[in-house]
Length: 185
Image (cartoon, rainbow, N blue to C red; front, side, top):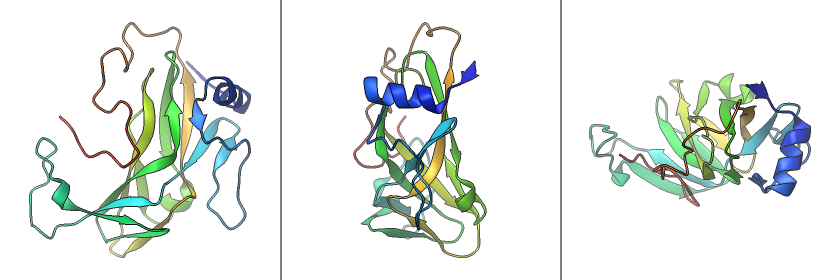
């Protein structure tokens, strides 16, 4: 496996529509950076957030997860309660080639504030908006900024196309979006 460069990511985003919308360079200014980097792409978070709430004192069960465990807000800044989490999605839609695996890593700006971004790998043939999980590991409220960078996606080329892609097996999280997707069994 090899890590794919900015040249490959740019070419695939133009020819294959792999990332849309696509930003050809790092955008900084007063924002947490997003866009194309040397060996990855820094994606943005949208402005819709599903904030976990324990108002019903329920057990968190991935097989019987209840939408009532979340409060949905459309805001430019989301505050994550202490020791809690939020679901959101990327601004960008991804179409992953059949011989590529994508790993997501949280940006250091958030990690240094105790905010952890978690995303499972984007498998060959997967497409959609990426649901992001933000954990606030601190005992204080923490803030996330919509339409700014939150995570870097690193593209890895496999030695060959797998026998069965995510699309081939009709993966349950195929074509996510446009809102964050809750757990499914």
